Length: 193
Image (cartoon, rainbow, N blue to C red; front, side):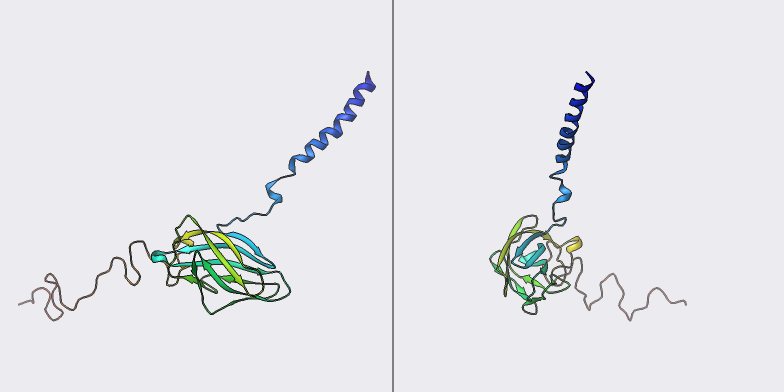
């Protein structure tokens, strides 16, 4: 009787060990994921990381992205389109050195569009064209020009309902004094007599 119980235990232990070992085969910690709002893509040896669009009033928008060249040959970003609108690359093509990085955004190389239908909270197609790497299109999230993206647009963000060039809550100064205010050359109060 002892030997039968021992045989069952010897058979059960490896079976239990094998079934428990497979429990961690698809853990989320084993995969790569993007912890930010942007999307990621690869265009040959060039990696696009954290691509997103920041939109303001009047159809203004800008593209934010990090570019990583894993190749041994330098490349350049020569064009960006947001939706059907060509972005203006400030300073021309953006050089991406071999085994190096480049940033598209407000503190580096800008890619701005002046008139695009980019609705915050929705996705929009963004196409990247390179000198050597193949072109790639991603569906990027559109963020509002608020909070951490408040300074992303050229000239900063514009509050909703305020047109470019206007200042919210200000009045134009006048050269004429108000009836309730004394003129600069009038004495205030009564002089002692």
